[in-house]
Amino acid sequence: MLAFGASVSSGEPLPRALAGAVGSAIGADLGSRAGMAVCGGEAAATQGAGLIVCPVLSAVGGAVGAQAGKAAALHVYDEIAGPPVRPGPATRPGSGG
Image (cartoon, rainbow, N blue to C red):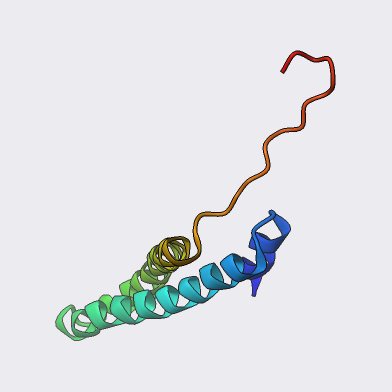
């Protein structure tokens, strides 16, 4: 919800913001699961030292997964719907630009 709200408040169209938020959530879930899967065997093999590393790997995996998921979802959205049109800066009459 925070990613969706931040995207909408920064001017993203609602469907594109929703696609990015869903992609981010799915990516974060998959990334944190991958981080936990990597360190699951490490906890037993390192006699407990992996128990300290597991939460860190899970958090890093979630953050990386969220970014990758959002980027992938927005890429797919832009391929289907076209990239968003950003309005250019307004020019004043007589400013020569």
